[in-house]
Length: 154
Image (cartoon, rainbow, N blue to C red; front, side, top):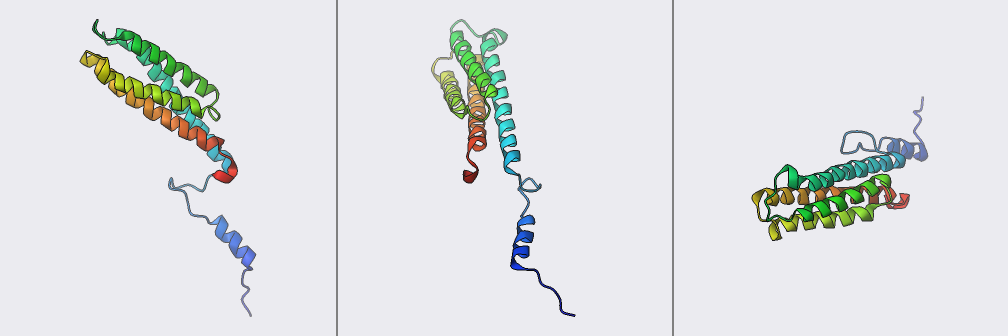
């Protein structure tokens, strides 16, 4: 009896179906699943940025900044970071530009630690929060760009 061989079309389909697993160990993600995952990443990063903004607003009183520390800087930039994070949460796929603005605000909070803070409490708070806001904003921006990209770019 002669052994039947698969047609080239059937072999190609078999190879496509046995595509290598993703780095996370699971099967390859479909486009809607990738979009959903990027949306969740943007929501998570923006939600954490909202919390960072709230902390910046209340930190001068919770941490007891000295009289020489500019409390208004943390309050104003905490409010701006929180507002942009809220807007980003309401539009997780299309608001990547807002996250880039938030990254700039995070960079300013970081720089403010060196430029205008006079106590070590204010310095370390602004130093750490500046890095956190910047990193979360960049993660949120990249997740939004990935989700909003047309299929042919993914």
